Length: 252
Figure 1 (spheres, rainbow, N blue to C red):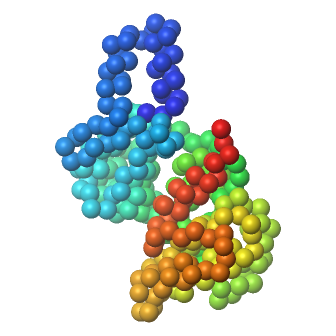
Figure 2: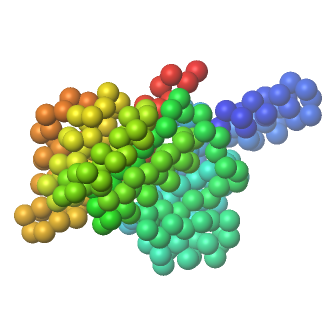
Figure 3: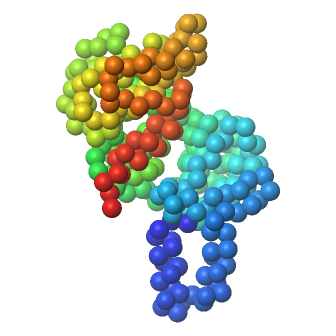
């Protein structure tokens, strides 16, 4: 339940168009709802400004559908992350309004497009084309949370002139997400150019000694640039969520 729905319910009770008993029914599972295999946090929209996000990896199609069926009547937008194509097809068969973004492995149910309420623009930069799936997960997450989002792909340090060609766009961003595999150098370069906070995302892209992203992660954690924070390997969702939190910090 979000702020808009809560206000509407309370107004209906105040105006007499909804009985107290009916309102009580609406609030019965406001804290959380136990459906045996999941405890759905319906209060999260009120508490944090965005509904609970379903982590699809490790859940069955039936479990994902069961959770969504309880959330859809209450929320305007719901995300399922790390969901594969087979599970997404199952969800779409049960809930035709669902949209699947294969590159990002993300599924979205959206009743209406979110209004951009962030104070500025979030820019998402990928070092290489192979990093784009993680960048897309970040972009879709940030957009769903009410942010204006722009992207810049394949501008890594192997051809750093490609990055500098977009200097104005980079300087205009209020928050920047930089996604890189291999040695993970790009976030340090970007952070050295700007005063905005930079969220670094290491990816598991690279040859053997990249250790599935650990080399990039350690490089980012050891950055000389002070305006960098680092999320986990391939965690585009976490980066998008954090960027949105920063971009809304001045919103009353």
